[in-house]
Image (cartoon, rainbow, N blue to C red; front, side):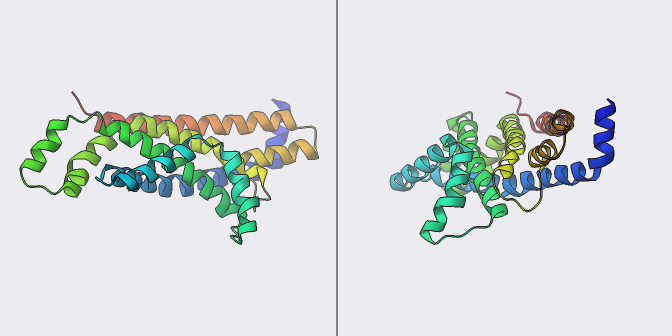
Length: 220
Protein backbone atom coordinates (compact mmCIF):
# COMPACT_ATOMS: atom_id res chain seq x y z
CA UNK A 1 0.00 0.00 0.00
CA UNK A 2 2.93 2.32 0.68
CA UNK A 3 4.11 2.08 -2.92
CA UNK A 4 0.61 2.81 -4.21
CA UNK A 5 0.28 5.82 -1.91
CA UNK A 6 3.62 7.20 -3.06
CA UNK A 7 2.65 6.57 -6.67
CA UNK A 8 -0.62 8.46 -6.27
CA UNK A 9 1.19 11.31 -4.56
CA UNK A 10 3.55 11.60 -7.53
CA UNK A 11 1.21 10.73 -10.39
CA UNK A 12 -2.29 11.31 -8.98
CA UNK A 13 -3.17 14.20 -11.35
CA UNK A 14 -1.71 12.24 -14.29
CA UNK A 15 -3.92 9.25 -13.48
CA UNK A 16 -6.94 11.56 -13.27
CA UNK A 17 -6.17 13.04 -16.69
CA UNK A 18 -5.56 9.58 -18.15
CA UNK A 19 -8.89 8.34 -16.82
CA UNK A 20 -10.71 11.35 -18.30
CA UNK A 21 -9.01 10.73 -21.65
CA UNK A 22 -10.09 7.09 -21.51
CA UNK A 23 -13.69 8.18 -20.89
CA UNK A 24 -13.44 10.76 -23.68
CA UNK A 25 -12.21 8.22 -26.22
CA UNK A 26 -14.94 5.81 -25.13
CA UNK A 27 -17.71 8.39 -25.58
CA UNK A 28 -16.38 9.80 -28.86
CA UNK A 29 -16.21 6.33 -30.39
CA UNK A 30 -19.33 4.75 -28.89
CA UNK A 31 -21.88 7.46 -29.75
CA UNK A 32 -21.11 7.75 -33.50
CA UNK A 33 -20.45 4.00 -33.67
CA UNK A 34 -23.85 3.27 -32.15
CA UNK A 35 -25.60 5.69 -34.52
CA UNK A 36 -23.77 4.29 -37.55
CA UNK A 37 -24.70 0.78 -36.44
CA UNK A 38 -28.36 1.80 -36.31
CA UNK A 39 -28.16 3.21 -39.84
CA UNK A 40 -26.53 0.02 -41.10
CA UNK A 41 -29.24 -2.04 -39.40
CA UNK A 42 -32.05 -0.04 -40.98
CA UNK A 43 -30.49 -0.19 -44.45
CA UNK A 44 -30.05 -3.97 -44.15
CA UNK A 45 -33.80 -4.27 -43.65
CA UNK A 46 -34.56 -2.67 -47.01
CA UNK A 47 -35.47 -5.04 -49.87
CA UNK A 48 -32.32 -4.18 -51.84
CA UNK A 49 -30.15 -7.33 -52.14
CA UNK A 50 -26.98 -5.56 -53.43
CA UNK A 51 -27.09 -3.04 -50.58
CA UNK A 52 -27.76 -5.75 -48.02
CA UNK A 53 -24.83 -7.77 -49.35
CA UNK A 54 -22.44 -4.80 -49.15
CA UNK A 55 -23.52 -3.97 -45.60
CA UNK A 56 -23.28 -7.60 -44.52
CA UNK A 57 -19.70 -7.64 -45.81
CA UNK A 58 -19.05 -4.39 -43.91
CA UNK A 59 -20.34 -5.88 -40.67
CA UNK A 60 -18.42 -9.12 -41.04
CA UNK A 61 -15.15 -7.34 -41.84
CA UNK A 62 -15.17 -4.88 -38.96
CA UNK A 63 -16.66 -7.41 -36.53
CA UNK A 64 -13.86 -9.89 -37.12
CA UNK A 65 -10.77 -7.81 -37.85
CA UNK A 66 -8.46 -7.20 -34.85
CA UNK A 67 -8.68 -3.61 -33.67
CA UNK A 68 -4.89 -3.28 -33.61
CA UNK A 69 -4.66 -4.40 -37.24
CA UNK A 70 -7.32 -1.90 -38.24
CA UNK A 71 -5.53 0.92 -36.39
CA UNK A 72 -2.22 0.02 -38.07
CA UNK A 73 -3.93 0.08 -41.46
CA UNK A 74 -5.49 3.50 -40.82
CA UNK A 75 -2.31 5.05 -39.39
CA UNK A 76 0.35 3.53 -41.64
CA UNK A 77 -1.35 2.26 -44.82
CA UNK A 78 -3.83 5.03 -45.62
CA UNK A 79 -1.07 7.67 -45.99
CA UNK A 80 0.22 5.63 -48.94
CA UNK A 81 -3.17 6.32 -50.52
CA UNK A 82 -2.82 10.03 -49.72
CA UNK A 83 -5.33 9.77 -46.90
CA UNK A 84 -3.85 11.39 -43.79
CA UNK A 85 -5.65 11.09 -40.46
CA UNK A 86 -4.21 12.37 -37.20
CA UNK A 87 -3.53 9.91 -34.39
CA UNK A 88 -6.47 10.79 -32.14
CA UNK A 89 -9.09 10.65 -34.93
CA UNK A 90 -7.46 7.39 -36.10
CA UNK A 91 -8.02 5.74 -32.73
CA UNK A 92 -11.59 7.06 -32.55
CA UNK A 93 -12.32 5.94 -36.13
CA UNK A 94 -10.96 2.46 -35.40
CA UNK A 95 -13.14 2.02 -32.33
CA UNK A 96 -16.15 3.58 -34.05
CA UNK A 97 -16.02 1.17 -37.00
CA UNK A 98 -15.72 -1.85 -34.71
CA UNK A 99 -18.54 -0.53 -32.51
CA UNK A 100 -20.83 0.07 -35.49
CA UNK A 101 -20.34 -3.48 -36.76
CA UNK A 102 -21.14 -5.07 -33.40
CA UNK A 103 -24.09 -2.70 -32.90
CA UNK A 104 -25.56 -3.69 -36.26
CA UNK A 105 -25.10 -7.36 -35.40
CA UNK A 106 -26.72 -7.03 -31.97
CA UNK A 107 -29.63 -4.99 -33.32
CA UNK A 108 -30.25 -7.59 -36.00
CA UNK A 109 -30.45 -10.23 -33.24
CA UNK A 110 -32.83 -7.96 -31.34
CA UNK A 111 -35.03 -7.58 -34.40
CA UNK A 112 -35.22 -11.35 -34.74
CA UNK A 113 -36.91 -11.49 -31.31
CA UNK A 114 -39.86 -9.41 -32.55
CA UNK A 115 -42.87 -11.48 -33.66
CA UNK A 116 -43.37 -11.16 -37.40
CA UNK A 117 -47.09 -10.68 -36.89
CA UNK A 118 -46.52 -7.19 -35.52
CA UNK A 119 -44.87 -6.00 -38.73
CA UNK A 120 -47.46 -7.73 -40.89
CA UNK A 121 -50.26 -6.08 -38.92
CA UNK A 122 -48.65 -2.66 -39.24
CA UNK A 123 -48.21 -3.07 -43.00
CA UNK A 124 -51.80 -4.24 -43.36
CA UNK A 125 -52.92 -1.01 -41.66
CA UNK A 126 -51.22 0.97 -44.40
CA UNK A 127 -48.02 1.97 -42.60
CA UNK A 128 -45.02 2.47 -44.84
CA UNK A 129 -42.14 0.00 -44.36
CA UNK A 130 -39.73 2.71 -43.21
CA UNK A 131 -42.26 3.90 -40.62
CA UNK A 132 -42.77 0.34 -39.43
CA UNK A 133 -39.01 0.08 -38.91
CA UNK A 134 -38.69 3.31 -36.93
CA UNK A 135 -41.97 3.11 -34.99
CA UNK A 136 -42.26 -0.61 -34.22
CA UNK A 137 -39.11 -2.56 -35.04
CA UNK A 138 -36.24 -0.37 -33.82
CA UNK A 139 -37.74 0.64 -30.44
CA UNK A 140 -38.31 -3.00 -29.48
CA UNK A 141 -34.93 -4.09 -30.83
CA UNK A 142 -33.16 -1.40 -28.81
CA UNK A 143 -34.94 -2.47 -25.65
CA UNK A 144 -33.95 -6.08 -26.27
CA UNK A 145 -30.21 -5.40 -26.68
CA UNK A 146 -29.45 -3.20 -23.67
CA UNK A 147 -27.32 -5.89 -22.03
CA UNK A 148 -25.27 -6.75 -25.13
CA UNK A 149 -24.73 -3.04 -25.79
CA UNK A 150 -23.60 -2.59 -22.20
CA UNK A 151 -21.02 -5.32 -22.68
CA UNK A 152 -19.96 -3.69 -25.95
CA UNK A 153 -19.48 -0.34 -24.21
CA UNK A 154 -17.29 -1.98 -21.56
CA UNK A 155 -15.23 -3.74 -24.25
CA UNK A 156 -14.89 -0.45 -26.12
CA UNK A 157 -13.71 1.31 -22.97
CA UNK A 158 -11.03 -1.34 -22.48
CA UNK A 159 -10.04 -1.08 -26.14
CA UNK A 160 -9.10 2.58 -25.73
CA UNK A 161 -5.73 1.13 -24.70
CA UNK A 162 -5.11 1.05 -28.46
CA UNK A 163 -4.07 4.68 -28.09
CA UNK A 164 -0.91 3.47 -26.38
CA UNK A 165 0.21 1.93 -29.68
CA UNK A 166 0.58 5.25 -31.52
CA UNK A 167 2.17 8.64 -30.71
CA UNK A 168 -1.06 9.84 -29.18
CA UNK A 169 -1.42 13.46 -27.95
CA UNK A 170 -1.91 12.74 -24.25
CA UNK A 171 -1.80 9.48 -22.34
CA UNK A 172 -4.73 7.25 -21.52
CA UNK A 173 -4.39 4.73 -18.68
CA UNK A 174 -2.37 2.05 -20.48
CA UNK A 175 0.02 4.57 -22.02
CA UNK A 176 0.54 6.21 -18.62
CA UNK A 177 1.34 2.86 -17.00
CA UNK A 178 3.87 2.15 -19.75
CA UNK A 179 5.55 5.52 -19.19
CA UNK A 180 5.71 5.04 -15.42
CA UNK A 181 7.14 1.54 -15.85
CA UNK A 182 9.84 2.88 -18.18
CA UNK A 183 10.72 5.87 -15.99
CA UNK A 184 10.71 4.18 -12.58
CA UNK A 185 10.40 0.89 -10.72
CA UNK A 186 6.73 1.52 -9.95
CA UNK A 187 5.36 -0.47 -12.88
CA UNK A 188 3.42 -2.99 -10.79
CA UNK A 189 1.73 -0.40 -8.51
CA UNK A 190 0.93 1.69 -11.60
CA UNK A 191 -0.66 -1.32 -13.25
CA UNK A 192 -2.68 -2.02 -10.09
CA UNK A 193 -4.01 1.55 -10.00
CA UNK A 194 -4.89 1.52 -13.71
CA UNK A 195 -6.54 -1.90 -13.38
CA UNK A 196 -8.62 -0.61 -10.46
CA UNK A 197 -9.76 2.36 -12.58
CA UNK A 198 -10.67 0.10 -15.50
CA UNK A 199 -12.62 -2.23 -13.19
CA UNK A 200 -14.40 0.67 -11.47
CA UNK A 201 -15.40 2.16 -14.82
CA UNK A 202 -16.59 -1.22 -16.08
CA UNK A 203 -18.66 -1.78 -12.94
CA UNK A 204 -20.20 1.68 -13.27
CA UNK A 205 -21.17 0.98 -16.89
CA UNK A 206 -22.55 -2.44 -15.93
CA UNK A 207 -24.64 -0.87 -13.15
CA UNK A 208 -26.00 1.80 -15.50
CA UNK A 209 -26.81 -0.86 -18.11
CA UNK A 210 -28.60 -3.08 -15.59
CA UNK A 211 -30.62 -0.11 -14.32
CA UNK A 212 -31.61 0.86 -17.86
CA UNK A 213 -32.50 -2.72 -18.73
CA UNK A 214 -34.89 -2.95 -15.77
CA UNK A 215 -36.66 0.22 -16.89
CA UNK A 216 -37.08 -0.77 -20.53
CA UNK A 217 -37.35 -4.54 -20.19
CA UNK A 218 -39.93 -6.17 -22.45
CA UNK A 219 -42.03 -8.64 -20.50
CA UNK A 220 -43.09 -11.56 -22.68
